[in-house]
Amino acid sequence: MKKIIMVALASVAMGFAFAEGEVGSAWDVNGYFRTGVEGNLDAKDAETKVYKDGQYYGNGKSRARLNINFTQEEYGFKFRYQCDGFGLNNADTVTTKSKVLDKNGDDTTNYIETKSTKETWFTQDNLKYMMGYAKFYDGKIIAEAGKLMDFYTNSEARYEYQAMGGYGARAVFIPVEGLYLSAAGSTYRADKFAADDDSVKDGKAKAGDIKLNKKLVTLSAKYKNKDFAIAGGHNFAGESYGFFALKSIQNLKFNIEAKYLDKEISGKTNDDGEKTAMTEAWELINYNFKGLGTPLEVGVYCHQIIVKDDTSYEFYPHMSYAINSVISPEFEVGIIKYTNGEKHKNYDKEDQSMTFSVTPSIKFTAGKKATVKVYYNYDKKDKSSMGTTLRVNY
Image (tube, rainbow, N blue to C red; front, top):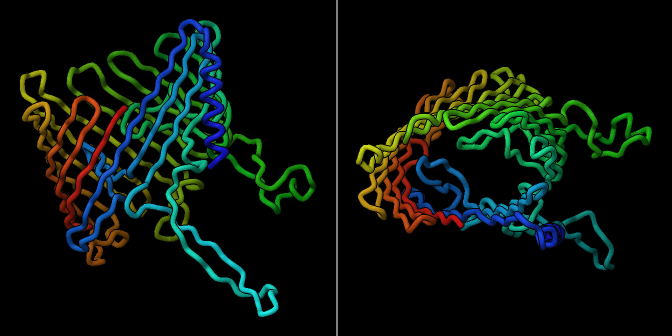
């Protein structure tokens, strides 16, 4: 915890030092806080694990996020702190073991286990990215280093998908306006030396060291203009992604993003217990009729997980009507189809090939930065619940 705080403060201090006296330098501090409380009406309990994150009820966690960006004409840095999953009963459980002493004060083979909980506010996982960058040749080449995040060739859809991350370095080439070509080497899916590797036994490497091979490399590209955006990338450990967004129709939002994980990294198996690949895709089409004089917004969000012997298809049609600048009733239906019902149980532990949910809600908007939502959710799988959510942007 102390190390992370010290690193963050040092980075901010360095940024202020760089900014002092520079012409054209700028600071941008932004982020958001979101959380919620939901009660299961059958179990009569309350939790914050099932935060309904707004328009499409994505089952995300409570989150606090802070972005700090410093930009100067030829260099800068980016930093993100993020804490997920805090709340009523979301703290990590920590188990500690204490030795039992005999009457002479000597150790025995017995231990006493003590369990306690702690919130994960300051761990390495809270540091989502911390990277510096430098620009060359009028900004046509950008070099980045640190804990990386893709700001040039990622998708612009719901999950901002990218097949990279971790610690490393990256180069971005912008040959023409709107076209971005990227090459990165990072620890995102890197192999590590095990204690029984020959190189470790021979003293050439240490256990846990990163192996220098193609799994370090991620290549990606993106082109965007006012009408559309298209992107894709590949990490040589076996992960690929693609993205497309249509922007040419006013008030219409349409995008697709997808990822592919080969059988060695997907973590999925088929009915025979063999490793199998996975494809996951998300699609959104949304239209706002405010341009036609009606404060109505309708759309559908779709999600597919395609795995041999266990594929699922999810559809979430939704609508929202703004009565005024403060109150907006909303309504959503969720439908999930499973190709293998034996792997998906309902509330009564029975196999199911399809499930559905219904969620009416009312959203209250406080200015441009804050929203509160009150909702009721009936889910065939999880039964009924009620809750409220809060999101504040800053």
